[in-house]
Image (cartoon, rainbow, N blue to C red; front, side, top):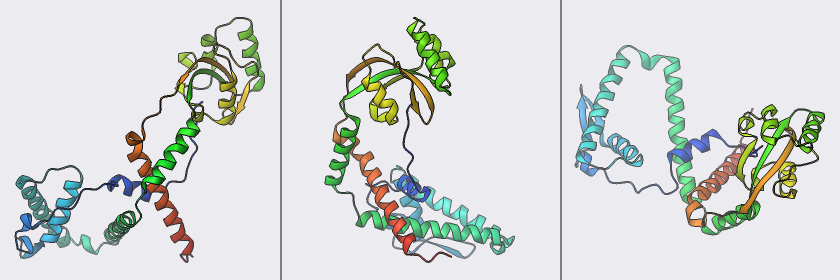
Length: 273
């Protein structure tokens, strides 16, 4: 059974990384959108500042929109609509409601946090040397072979021993796999596909790599998932992706680790009652 070790990941950091790629594009000036005026429109006497249009424009560009007159016009129209609805909302007193003001504060905090994290990422970039070291570490952990295995997973050791005995008498592994409690592959003869040993929990991996091709484990293997009977179908050389291909993912992973460490340090210094 494949197993990924759980790791503490703050939703805050994960959300920030999704919103702010490590190689974010350069901000473009909004002078074209607002001209030399500091106001893009006035609604019922209320001015919409050009800075607000700039912020909305940049958010659209960051999402992959192409800068154009049409986009800038859409930004202006959107801000006008927002202002009209905002004024209508105030007339009904929604700006006085506690739950609305609580949402205001959450949104304000989110913007401040995002600005802080963006600055932190800019001043604490992931170095190429760190990426290379992480890549080498991952490659070493994965090894240079991958294995095509099957397994039958049961709750009790006696049940696993019974399956071994039936296999030794000539029954087909694929048929016996139908009683496996692993729903992901029981109907496929217990087939786990190709994977490096690092893709499995250690007791399972150790037993799998010790098998000869075409053989099954005569002694059931115990893991936190239950008792396994494993059969090794094939072995082949593992082809690792080149560093440049996986560099962005490794950079993001390391950046997330740096952010998590920083947040942990800030929490440790904070007086929380």
